[in-house]
Length: 192
Image 1 (cartoon, rainbow, N blue to C red):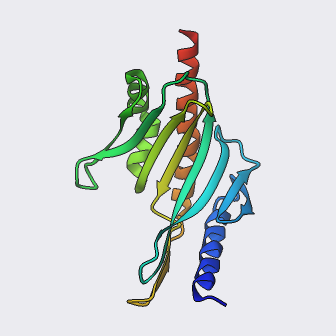
Image 2: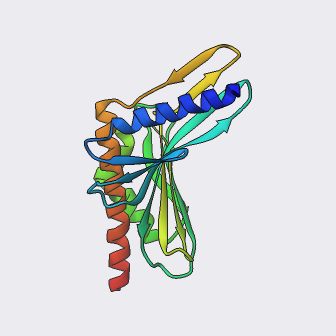
Image 3: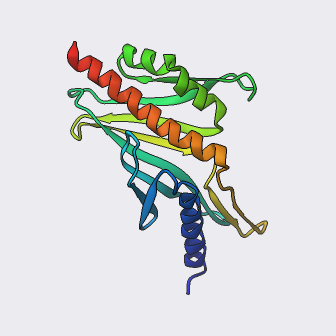
């Protein structure tokens, strides 16, 4: 048995443990290195909790991401947005969405009090929103600061941080609210 395959199994178990924290809101079924969400009432489609191997030097580091789709038809223009924090002190930093997209979309995202309050309250590694014209949907990736699995050989270290009850609730609200904001904006564009 390969040593790293044993680490991979521990990482998959840690991902499953993270998913169980969300069972009240989202059921999951395993599909390799990611867990597909089903039986939820969120505005997101094809919701996935996944791990990506981000480092192999002296061990393994897996990062945890939420990824989902919001189906829309915005024509042929591709878009890319991301969440950025303004300010360097945690207590005073402010979230803002930036990127290549129509200005009204940025305005809607940056004026949503609920969405910005959730981004401020949570310790996030980032959010990206991509519109893929051929596929006719947004792909949203949320990088929380929980669920990562770290196994280092030098120095010996094994670490997983599971989400708190507050982080579970905030994550679910953030996924739902961001999906609703994107759908509402797209719906308002279709009427004009």
